[in-house]
Amino acid sequence: MHTNWEIIGREGINFYGKMSASISHEIKNILAIINENAGLLSDFTMMAERGVPIEPERLKIIAAKIAEQVKRADLIVKNMNQFAHSIDEQIKTVVLDDLVAVVVKLSLRFAANRGVHLEHQPAAIPVSITTSPFLLKNLVWLCLDKAMDIAGEKKNVSIIAKDGQNGVMIKFKHSGIIQEKSGISFPGEQENALLTLLRAEMEINDEAGELTLHLPASLDQ
Amino acid sequence: MAEKILLVDDEKDFVETLAERMRTRGMNVSTNTSAKDVLDNVDIESFDAIVLDLQMPDMDGIEALKLIRAKNPNLQVILLTGHATVEKGIEAMKLGALDLLEKPTDIETLTEKIKKASTRKMMLVQEETAGKIKDIIGGKGW
Image (cartoon, rainbow over all chains, first blue to last red; front, top):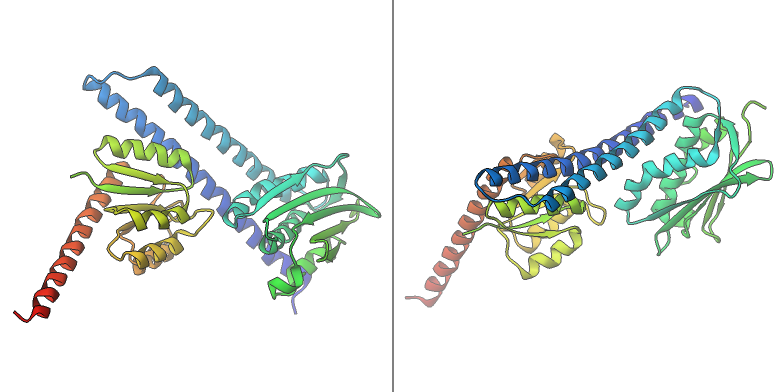
């Protein structure tokens, strides 16, 4: 019998590894684009040495493409940095929307690989939560992963964080059926361990195609 | 004769730039940003080599490799990946990939692999043609 901390320790490493691998894959793709554009510049230089004139317009396009990829990499690294810092403090007050946004951004490649359109709907009134940022990100990812797996025909998954009855809530709309299609019990061991430690509850409404996390506004209380 | 290449990657900027560089080197290059489109493409056109990204949104590169090789076992596939693990490399080779290159790749290395792919395909086609001729002659009972 494993304790909740043993379970989330193992799951936390899995989560961290999965996100790091996805981020590094994205960065490799960006490096490949920059590498080809640098190569193209080098090709133009060689041609110019042989008397073929360089068109300034072409150089402008290459410079713009490189700048665009640098911007893309910068955003990815910013998200990665924010994610890495979520283990700095065990309990912290954060804006729930910001926390959800980071998980959504880190999950975009996983969504694309499954042909899922993932959308984060910002809350009309942002809410704060005092919680364990890393554990909550892990739980949001597990719910998102499940929602993307079972997403209905249109393959749309949306996520919204807002005020709840006794705290705050995060709602995942997936239009799918969790219990029937997956064949694996959900929430499983990992989700239950995180739910217990975060003092959260999971509500599954297959009729509405929704999954909702109910969380206390503060773990300090 | 120029090598006829199909370059497949979901990163449009990557395929377009690499294709331009390959064309400068005398190759005849077509591009696709979807693995599913490649399967239609290989039905109607012949290529000396297909350079295929291992991880694409609509289809895993290994899955695409299996389907391409099932359609035409003579087609030479070079896989590109962000992370070339030994396991993936072995899996790809077992399925008949010519090589697995890690991104970002060096164009000279890629060109060398493409030339190797082109030669290998030509040999396979020649062997196949010789076999067919042998069957025809044998079948006639001359």
